[in-house]
Length: 184
Image (tube, rainbow, N blue to C red; front, side, top):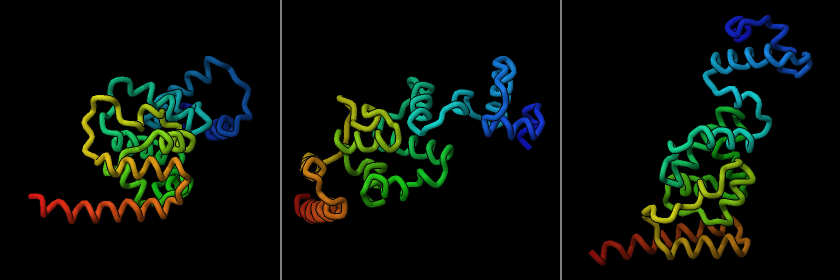
């Protein structure tokens, strides 16, 4: 279905996909632009070979259209990677690759827990996301407890098991929620 829409034969598209066809640069550029138009993506997205290259191109294209929330930026990256690479970048797969639980990753995406620089480095290695996208920008209001952030940072810096970290976060949240009603 793609080949006729792009204006090439199916066998030729198959050769291009397998990188077995000689490269006439002008013809390939035209074909690439048509293919990108057909799939609704930017031409450079079809040329990248790794998730990191893809995210790099994606971030450059966004320019000033970057969400301010760290969680929104992480969600955008995960969505983009899943669209391009599929099952390899589901929340479950990314959490597993990071060595954490889906709940902890969901807390990052929902902005309930701030991503520390050490966690951002791990995520950058997995997703290609720029560290400055994942660590909150100075001056951006973040509704997170400094106590919880200290726990997360200490745990990650000391190589705490992700399951233990998740348990510590849940205990802290439970304790914090119990204190809130009595103070009002």
